[in-house]
Length: 418
Figure 1: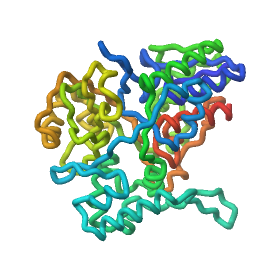
Figure 2 (figure 1 turned 60 degrees about the horizontal axis):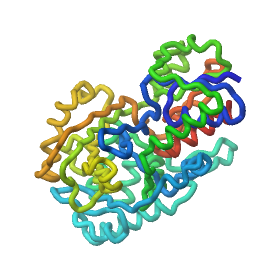
Figure 3 (figure 1 turned 180 degrees about the vertical axis):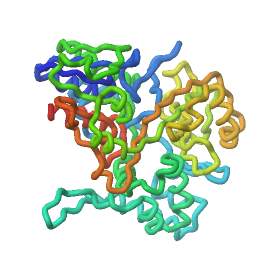
């Protein structure tokens, strides 16, 4: 069977790999001059390892990723570390990644800290929060009918919600924050692990190995090849679309009803500024810093070289400064100099002695689907109304958050369906 895959990200590569293994003829079409999508990496002069365009790591709970790594013979090429996660609030950085650090969190009273710890432990321990209707309707996620906002206020208390979770939800989802389902928040807590994994050489190691395996089985990969109309692929038996849902409108003739269904999905874009520094920025050793100040234009500061040794990057310190915004936000029309100027005052509030060598800007207009209440009712199926055309993108990763592990799982699921 001849299968065309549009998009050379992790889902497309995984699907291609699974299909060539069982003898299908696979062609992958990628509009960029590199593979990997959001997990793709790059390397600069004197760097030994690749760095991702958008920050990446994996959890100990990422089973699909670990199974694929083992199958590809990459088990010796990844490692786990236990970095520090903190919160920036009221001009201070406070560790927030363990029961002890929660109980010592300075911005809440002792009783509030205890409540935060107990509720978070409840969410962490809660497994398979699903219910099944007695009338025989399909099983659905119990938390999906509740907004995160309402559940968190009720369970954590209003002050804790406003201090800890509201700034992060609003920074990530903007106008959609009050509509985000509790199932999305539960999944974020459930999947996180204190230990984080990374590849020796960066996630590009995984991307390259998948591409190598596909080519070895006579699969074809076309870079710099953007499919602008599905009619270009009439000679294929099946087509898998891994592109973002809004881009589907541009390349296919869709029925009115299907267009209406897809139009109910919402997305936010991601902007990521990578700063190459002379000196360490988060001097307390924090790897991931959540920004819980509403006036800041970014939500996360991630010092990659507080996770991975700087020696692999020419002894430079590498800092990600990231945020999520509406696809119509003015930031997406700014160049890297303008973005840096916009971010700089707030960065200096964290560390006034910022010493930058240069910076790199990466953007994606549809990086994060909005998991709203009752999302399962609007989530599109893998089989589209177009004959022999299948959808496998972030819109179908539910209830879990987007990431390499679920991109792999989705690639495996679509290949089995094909």
